[in-house]
Image 1 (tube, rainbow, N blue to C red):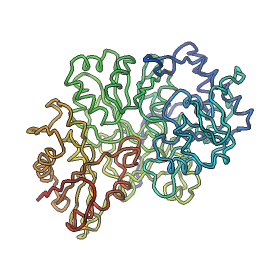
Image 2 (cartoon, rainbow, N blue to C red):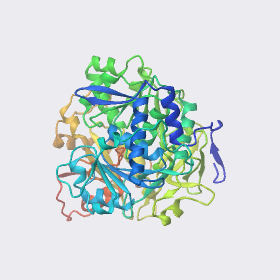
Image 3 (cartoon, helix red, strand yellow):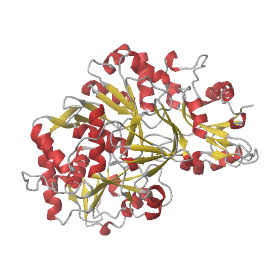
Image 4 (cartoon, one colour):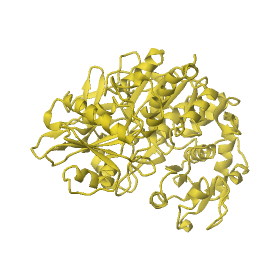
Length: 571
């Protein structure tokens, strides 16, 4: 494929509503008494109907307007997923304002900096813990709280006060232009000057119009949702797939952190579709293999398909769903593209690394260096207060430089690596670290993440982060490599890896790309320490910075490190 060739869907993008207010109003009129959202209260899911949802939104809008909040104003939200966040977010977006959801797990300094950077007129926080992260509250015209806050720096508005505002029969914002910015999201692993993506009504609604042609979601469908709403996978792709198609969005109130709670919620909701990242599917597979009742519950008669993104899904996990007749759909995209650009066809056998064909309305092009370019109604308007970064990625004719390198094959787009992760050794040989990481990570259930480094060095090295939860389980043999020793602790895992790494290394065709040393580190990567993105991918810039000493020690034995670690020679 040449740099001038454009790769796009043969299916035309259908019409879609001009803005979110029109979409919400139409759905509420057609499905007034049906549930659109539910979350757990006192151990059971309590539904929110479309009619009640729209009345809450109009009350919120009336309150906001009475306090001087206008079209074009911004509201930042520091909160985990919850009903108050959903209603406030949609009320603001529909009336022409812009919401800026920010990860509730960020430490105070980080959270406060991101809130102030987006210059919000109003700020909303979940509770005391989120409120305490903010300083200089006088810079915001109003602060809204969801739960009671005992220690206040300034007077706040409780969310319930907004709902007590007068209702109107009409939602505000039906005349808002589809090109109006309604959502701003910080990119994963933001480093240095923040990159805050500006997305419009058309960005969001065009994507859902495209997806409607590819899967037939209806008001009969049920979502079990744990993906965070401050991130595009959960906050745009999944959430609006449910809302636009009038399916029921059920909050998984363990937020994917407790597999037992997730399975308990699964049993109550019996989702027909499920959006997740590979780590959760791996945990589910372990439980499925251990308990026939869980297997029966997961693969109930109405489960239609599961969706995966963020990282390659191990073949044995995909095979497990395929064996039960449940299609595994995979997609690719970025926050800047709202997010989905390509999607796999579940009727075609999955190929490792292939993320499918362009969705209707979206065009792809490969630059001379293999970078994937995207153009379509899903592409952002630019980064907020970061013109330099915007100019680097958006061309005048609308092509967005994704930073991902790929190839186009008959079966679809093949992802190779992030462009900025490809490096050269001291002998000028090029190394693609993600290829090495995937070889190792796809086979070992005890490995959480792998990170390859070596720019300018004589050879690559690799950092390994264990999945310590596996030490406490009895995994099914179908999940494990042949001859796996099933380690019970880090020391046993070190012995196990010493043999496996040499086997994996031998499978790397280019000898210069084979890591000569590895380090197993007793450390949990997390979103809270920013080493993982909200989609639970490793954030390479953060890992490179945080573990700089460990990387250097693999090239120099005299370099001391403080972390508990095991060094493995791979030659």
